[in-house]
Length: 221
Image 1 (spheres, helix red, strand yellow):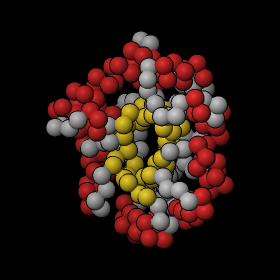
Image 2 (cartoon, one colour):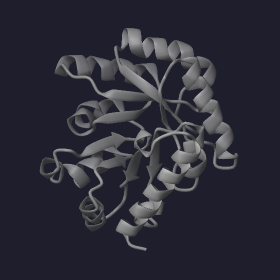
Image 3 (cartoon, one colour):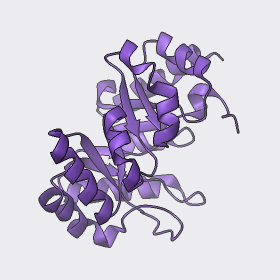
Image 4 (cartoon, one colour):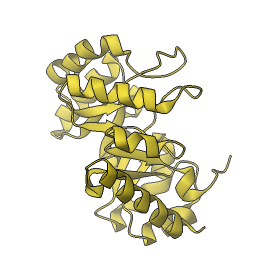
């Protein structure tokens, strides 16, 4: 199928899944993950009218979007990959939301730079729900203290939680856990669900799904 047909199919899924869950399709932000995609595919996606995109790396996002963004004033770019502290200024020049706040050093420097620039952007805390040593994210037990630090010390606008389930675990278990954590901390937004599992994430409260392959096809190496 074409990219336009893929968008239509996934948006149809969103309508059906939200209806079954007693929600509205407008509750879900479909983040089109454009990492490692050629410019012609991004242009094709933009021509469908879609305006919310996600990137994993600041440097690649600059190559993809620096020239395009001025032409699309309603474009939203979400950073969904790790943010290095030395890339914070570059990230804030490009992104409209950050999904991967996961450590005090990053939160402090991000908050300091936002204060310097006199701006605020919505942020998610990445939670390592599977407590995998090789994966980024705050551990669930450390979330209460880290959330307080982000809000009080770093003065970040934390709107929700994000997770990437372990590859060998049933994703719904982790989505339900993240939903529970969000409710405990009165956070309304949940960034969870990708191409292979967004259909499980939506009934469990996802507000932002990060879909790449199902929209664009397999990525180039």
